[in-house]
Image 1 (cartoon, one colour):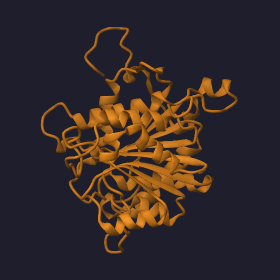
Image 2: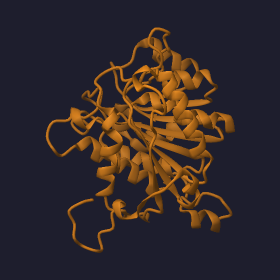
Image 3: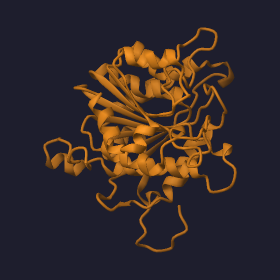
Image 4: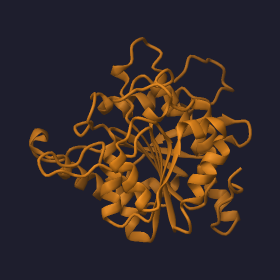
Length: 321
């Protein structure tokens, strides 16, 4: 936790409890770590992301000026590789294992927050929701991540949304996409499927309009899954990622948009991926700090269990703003 000795300074480290998946339904939200980076196209290091995100979240205070403190949060621990030699398990095998666990997490009556880990985990994290009705994804990312899965390599951090599309993804929006970071073929692939691309420049012009476009692109889907690849942030704000580049959005813009996504009653899951603390020079670790606060901002917009019960199970977050 942080350095404060003031008893009034409640931090996430004071409220997050260790729990098993069987007890998840006692909490408003649950954290699940996925310390894997075998599928990264660029620089590795995201396997250390869950530990860094937890550390920085523990030292983050729980109070939001508009929403007050967060609700109850549990940490279910990390997904493990399971039996067998990890080096002999393919990324596809790992995705299958994560998907099995993610299914159990989604079945629990608590809001899931997945801590990455590389972006290939997005596919197994979100795929179980496809079995429950129509699904849309809001992807905060510098890249579209709709590359084809090639037989010689298998899934990568660049393929998760192509994999979800192949399984029937109904809606897709990428917020914060960077010019000169995506091939024309992949941009056309998303456009042909009715996806929405909101550039980092457009976020800078008006982040409220930007996120409204993304949510409108979800149409009438039953559920929404939100993903933050930390490379959506400008390299100065998040240098510890696989592919840092200039021209990204600011952390303040990201946090504001996450509050609006978090208020959506259809939101069924959230993740922060591609946090690679070892790739950042110095000791401040701006990347993990930004990622942990992204989690805090989104959770601050979620209704608590007692609020949902008072509203007959309906969202109490009060719309987009």
